[in-house]
Length: 385
Image (cartoon, rainbow, N blue to C red):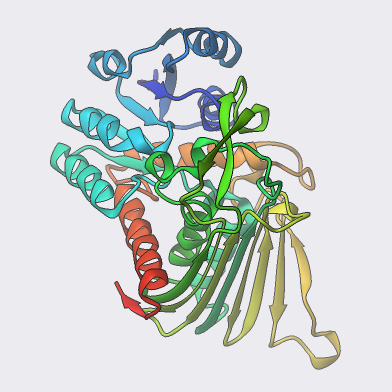
C-alpha cells in the first residue's frame, strides 16, 4: 500500500535548517513511518545562501519570500526555523492558511507572541510541533519510561545545567542572539528553554520560580558580516549594546512538590554544549548528559548495599527507544538523530489523530516559565505561573 505524502516548506536554512533538512531526508530511510516526506521548498533571505542550501540539503526548489511558501497549496507543513523575531508573523500566517506549524524554540520572543501563535494554531485545528529534540535522545526517552512506570517513585529534585562558552570573548561581535529585538532573550531562551522543557517533560508542570539573569559583557563590536552562521561572524570598530542575558539561574517548584534548580550560561569557559540533568527520587536517581548522549546513569536504592552505586546503562540496544532502527546493538547515535526521532513520533501521532508532543501548547507553557523567570529577576521575588 502506498503511503500518503506530507509536503514540507522550510523557512530558514542555516544551523537549524541544516538539522531539520537532514531529518526530513533521513526519516523514511530508517523508519517505517505512515507518511512519505516530500522536501519541496526551502526559504531564506539570501538567494545565494538559500540556493546553495537547496542543492546541498536535497530540496526540490528554493524561495526568498516565505509568503509564497505559505501560499503554496501543495505544502502541508510550514517549518519555522528562523530567528525569533519572525516566528509570530510566519507561524500565524501558516496557521491561517491551514498549514501545520512546526516551529523552532522558543516559539515567540515574548509571552504575548507565543500566545498569539498558540491561538492561531488552535483556531486552525491543525496539529503542531515544537523542536525540543532532547526529549528524543534514547536515554531521555528511557528515563521518561522509567519515571512513568513508577520505578523511581516520588521525585524530589530536578537539577539541570546547560552550559556553553561561545561568547566569552568580549570581542565576539553583536550577532542576532545578543539582541533582544531579534531573539527575545539570551541564555534563557537559547538554551534554558531546553532544560525547562526537559523538566516539564520528565517531572511535570512548574508552578513558581525565583531567578536571576546577568549580562557580563554589555557592549560588543557591531556585526559587519556573516557568511555561514554565528561562527563566521566578523565585526568592525563600532560598538553596540548587548541587551540580553549571558547567564540565567533559577529555582522552581513543581506541581508535584519536587524542587528544581536550573542554570543556563554561555559564559562557562571550556563547556561547549554541556546539557546535563539529574533526577533524585524516592527509589533512586538518574543522570543524563548530552555530551555522553548514549548513556543513562542510574542509581537503584533497592540494590544490595555492597553493590550500590551509580551504574551506566548503554542505551544502544534494540530494546531501547529508537536505537534499533539505526545500527546493530552497541553502536552509538548522535545529535542529528534526535531530530529524526522527533519527526518519527510526530508522524506516528498524526496517523493516530493525536497532536504530536511537544507541540505549540508545550511551547507556550515553556514560554510562561521563561516569562516568569524574567519577571522574577526584575522584581527579585518569587513569581507564580
